[in-house]
Length: 479
Ligand code: NOJ
Image (cartoon, rainbow, N blue to C red; front, top):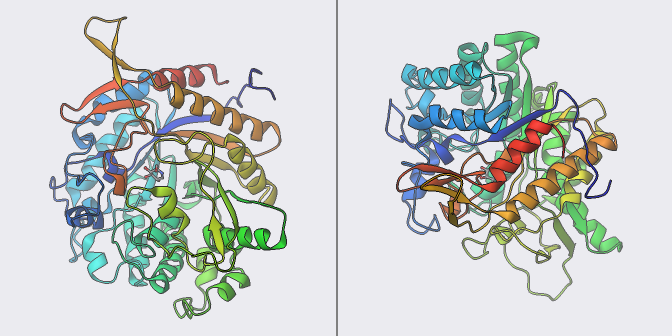
């Protein structure tokens, strides 16, 4: 398929945009919400690049009616949002906060009224602080508390939610949160990072069971993984082994238990000396291995890896300069001393990430070949750039952001999805990250991913060319 070929997406293809609670909501102290680990992390000096926090963010908690209108104008049929756990169970006493539930009820109702299907993530990284005080994800009890929370949401919103996503990018929670400490709660301990991997898997399984216990088979259950596309720099045995090692800790730690009920033996071997796996108990893998209605995949770029040559000074896990995500990510996983992630090539986005749309096609095809009965959705894809606001001549006093690079990235990646479908991948939807510029975690508000700009001091929403381009793609159902 050439770059000019027009490709129609399947008639029932889902087009959406995505956000996450802590990144957009603000209203950190309203209606009974208490701290999450990200509120705490933001208060620690030096953790967030611009010293910011989520107290106001995009003020989505109050402005959701306006933003739902923007989605309507964009024409999308679905919205991927997340629920803030600390709004539902704010304190250690386990009291259910009705005001928190009421808020999401209003949001879900409005989405439904506008004909926009809610795809709801239960956990997009904002763990209640009291659970971290009790040990956080390395503590098995957190998975049980998560399942209770999942059951409550299913009971409350079973009539309104289209797809339930148990976890978003557990990779980040485990390796950035507890491995190299770049994310909340900022812990650097690979034994605990691997306990986190397992307890997130367990939370997924218990959560899926809790949702189905409430709603039966009509519940549509998913999980979103940021599967890595690791490319070996050469065909040499050493470089291929480096790729395999990266794949094991990035991808297989989730795919194995969730989709096949096993941990690859090579993961255990590679993690020798890091953990003794005492946290994996009998019956856990059966619990984790629950039927999945759809697998969510987040994709942004690829990694090029090679074997680390002996004698070359190795960077220790997690010592990348702050604000340099490629470094943070490359060094985040356990047992990667023998793996060298090469500097990204070509034109990089503002995140310092390379652009390789072909990687998305390859990934979707690979996962589809391996799990032929599984539907896939691209639950995030997008790019950050340095945007500038221009006057919009079409309306007096109007403003617009011309963001040709984001437009190109969007077009190329939608095309990559179309190509994967054409070649046989089972992809049912695409969600652009993000509807709005928002709080980009440890990078604060310095990186903008939105199809719509947020002017933070005034909370004004300003369309970008990419938002208009996406509206066109959605309308045409074609690229
Ligand atoms: C993945 C995460 O799910 C999301 O929260 C983040 O903002 C984007 N990637 C961009 O880094």
